[in-house]
Image 1 (cartoon, rainbow, N blue to C red):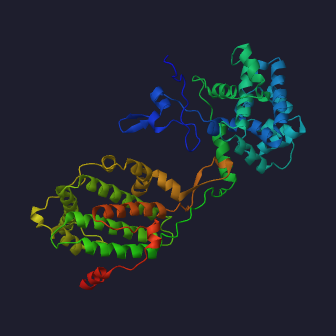
Image 2: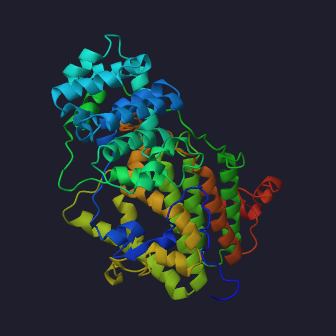
Image 3: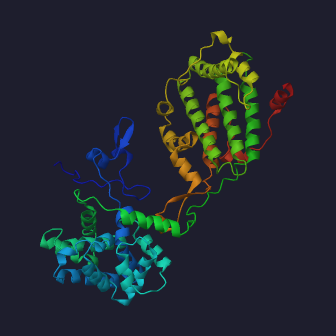
Length: 508
């Protein structure tokens, strides 16, 4: 090995702190990004769910864990495991799930439940099982448990502590299930491993033990498909008999820069109109000049509408941000190429779209109320007679927006804003989930989603930054225009538009 070469370089830490495969670690296949595990398994994975299928079966362990401190809970679990190890029929006690206990002979079932419920703390905790009509072995559980009022709060805590399969509490429950299989002789492992697993809960450093415990517990015998009768019944009864609980919002809305106000946008537009007048040199078609200033005016209008009460934090705010992003990328690409033919092509594409709509409305389709047919008729024929105007049915440049961003050096900006806002534009599940559903805080509901209109993060600051970058392009193409929304120039430069602007308005 070469000198100085690292044998096992550490993976770069993520900003989120999560240990997950980065984008570069995914494999690009047929328009999909496949994570390494999915690639290695080749679609042959069989998923097993702790939360959905196995947690309800080990509910009795979760109730004990939630009712006492961990050391005492582990003492109770070892007590039960010792009972199994010394029993003459220990091979019968390999399955400590509620369904497995219910399948024991009645005498063994009663003996085990009586032993489990013998300590007063355990009997009180386990009495919450009486809440469920579909409880496996219900007769013996009701017979051996005290007739006290079941504690719904304890039940919620028990499920909440163990819902995620890698919590300490969930691992303790899984450890009990696994050790019963080992002690009963159902699951064979080396004696050294068995001894290490049995000591696991009291070890100072459990990091080397817990993964193997969880990996072994999750393994299922393919010849014995799981019986999901009780798990399904448990979640159904929990849903029917307990209410949804709202979770408090964990994020705070960022404060919008006070510079981004409707007045600031209006002043910027007035100054931009004056600059348009100063740089406008002909009444002939000037595709470049019209495009650059038109894009800036258009995005200022969108931003002005986003300033409206509640719009920046709404779905429409995200649609506005996506549109401003697309304008920003198109403009940067046009400026980078800066060819008269390309500016003309961009303009003709828009006129062609107007012509296409006019033809549709002139044929058999009635126009919607929001469309001004006279306006699109004018746009389609004002530069060239429409009989000579070709309608482009593809994109105006022949490239998609991602490729445009790459060629214009804005791939980072594209990655930052496009994907999520595009989902809002197309009404995909992610944005629908974010805006229309809330996570239920009741662990007995498996953190499901229920409909609720959610507040969203404000889009105005990000939109204003993109608008300032568009204004920067105006300045680069037609110097000098220094005013911005989010810069010091904006606060320092408050002079009204010059006399040329007044003349411009008078001509209108």
